Length: 260
Image 1 (tube, helix red, strand yellow):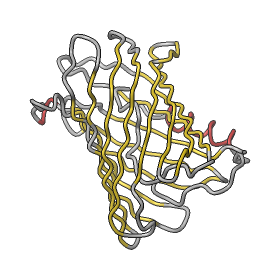
Image 2 (cartoon, one colour; image 1 turned 90 degrees about the vertical axis):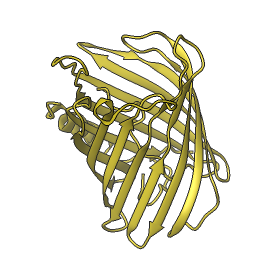
Image 3 (cartoon, one colour; image 1 turned 180 degrees about the horizontal axis):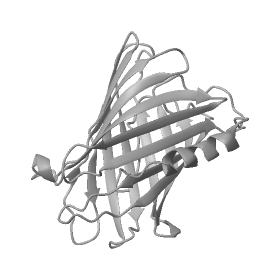
């Protein structure tokens, strides 16, 4: 998230209304091959002793790269994160996916994120997030993989720009080529509680031999970041930028601090 981090350690009063609103919002979009972790990472991490819970939900109409068929689906992610040391956060993620009529667990991820000390209101910052994941895709083979996401950010006045240089590297399975999956975000703060953003995600292909532009899955989203009670809410809607991309995509991310 790009707005003020949570400071209160209690459940938001309107959590049920938020969840219902999320499902209604996304279900009205006729539009998931969207990213498993549908965020652009920033310097917003849990402080030592703080535990955060995050829920992501996305829905898209997926374009097949070689036919005119589509494969509607839902995708979600639950994350439990804890501040373990100053500048360090550890987390566990459970990705889930729904095709046709059933939900299923799609793997298990363990992550560690570091953000270097920096001025919280302006100028440059950097960080790094590393992940080890067991993936259990709906139509693929089970495997282990790692993901590395360098984080580069810059704040100036009401503006905040972030770039994640994602690199996914399988460690088991037949195909162990690393793939380049960058993402970016440009945010304009409206007030202390709200901001508007443009987010960009791309699956660019094997790092040693990137896809041509027309074969990449590129997504651009218009996003609103705000607070509802004690919860940080990130809502976005967008579309694919190439013939190989998802046609339309919507997502919502809800995060809040758990009580002591």
